[in-house]
Image (cartoon, rainbow, N blue to C red; front, top):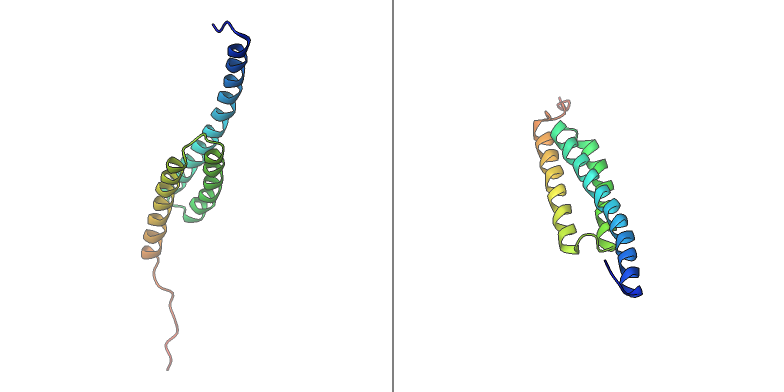
Length: 103
């Protein structure tokens, strides 16, 4: 246990910050999982919608130093790559629209 007043205050401050950071970290991870779940389900629109929200949460956590900025960038890149891969596969599987031939 801390003995000086300054050390006791630091313990109180660190605990408050730990709780705040835990919430931000949890939100970012939750929305990242939602993106992964949408990709797993093959839902491109839901994945893109969740991706935008996840980017916001990750950026906010990085801004407040919960994640290092490079760690945040790496997380965002991984999510974006997953969604992009899904979108490319979905586009390739979609048959081209039938266009009337000029007679």
